[in-house]
Image (cartoon, rainbow, N blue to C red):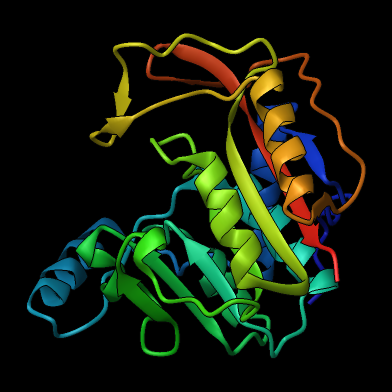
Length: 252
């Protein structure tokens, strides 16, 4: 099926400019069947009860606001990651990315999260979800064709350690695809938390330091880099900001 929504331009770093981009991405995912199936509230509650009894898989409500992240990640994988390569998702609970890739013929899919419900996600019979912290997962050096990490780094993750671990796990030509909360000048989030974890909004200075560290580890931007933001289309937890996309590739 051909989507009426255009594929995003390939970028090493890009910033969400407007809420309309989220709406377009959500429409594109729905059009192509890359999003989780929609269910009415009564059926969802019944299915959740069945899932709690381990009679079926957990039916998640879609996080529409993350459609921009998933749309970009799927398209980047389609043009850079072979279908037989291992794709590993970090912070996989409630993330549609592996489901969407499975719908596109990717067979070696795995992900981790500390939330135990991750093993009851849709598609869990063919996607190797595990309950674990990324830093505790056994992922052999050079084994991954891509690592995705959508909306996770802002929740208390040591970004430098994450980059180092990812660089080790990726094979030559592998891709690291990341999204995170962002504002060029930075925003103070002292005293604020999200989902019981610390919450930070990355600044241009912080992201630039990530890119410098990534380069030292053999990870280069996989396209043009733009860290500019003229609007703050996301308002949440009393802060207004935007989302940042990063796509890095590992030198051979």
